[in-house]
Image 1 (cartoon, rainbow, N blue to C red):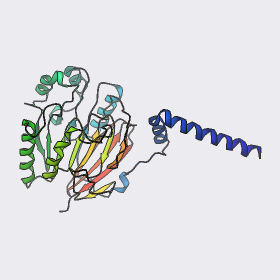
Image 2 (cartoon, rainbow, N blue to C red):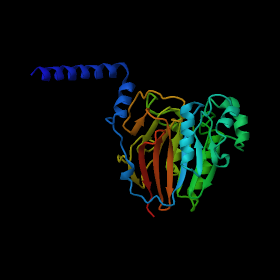
Image 3 (cartoon, one colour):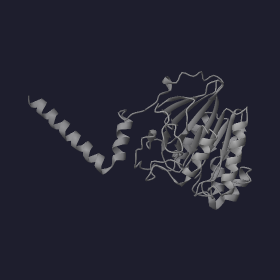
Image 4 (cartoon, rainbow, N blue to C red):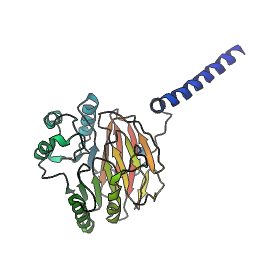
Length: 314
């Protein structure tokens, strides 16, 4: 009887400590629960049934810096042998020269960048190194069209960047050889750290919707977040969490997990499937021959934290 009483007291004390920890530091409690496997992991690789043979890898990550965590992220990314590397801005947080030296083991020819606000002081050096004329450009890789603009430059409907994006998307949407359109930039259109869940960049969503952009990759928020397919008026078109077939609306994925730091996630909006500020890592997109893309957020520990699948009918 005495032993039961002791166990009961220990349980009560543990619950009180959990409650106190939550109110003092919710992030710390979330992280502890995640590490012991209590916090949810929404989607798992074994639930994805696509044939991955012949897949082409595309890696994306932003907010990197020059830390030990950053090096781990880049080495993990490189080991996935991606055909395309997308850096989503806020690269070195120091100078372009230091970034170039830090990443000299990556193949420059398959690396594409956008710049964040912390990179703009060295804009000319970055443009020269990556053979870019400006920060808004596009390219094709097999059946995927990639397009980016600078979130640090004007992007209103009267701007040069907006007109470029509109014309580029119009042409890509008519190209019979293109199955996928991926838009990528530094600052996000949708983010949990924004009071309303979105930023001024939301002005671009109507354009992305008009031309059936499939994925939007974004950084700036030092966390991993993935949305459900959404229209420009904020309506979630598919409440599935892991697999989508011909989804209406765009899926937004924030990958600000390069290694600089983690940010507190202050808000949890209903359109997010997953929000993770526990892990550094990168997004690996596998482009398959059957008009399928499989996305995996791979933590530096090797753990696949999130998996999702987008299919298009043949």
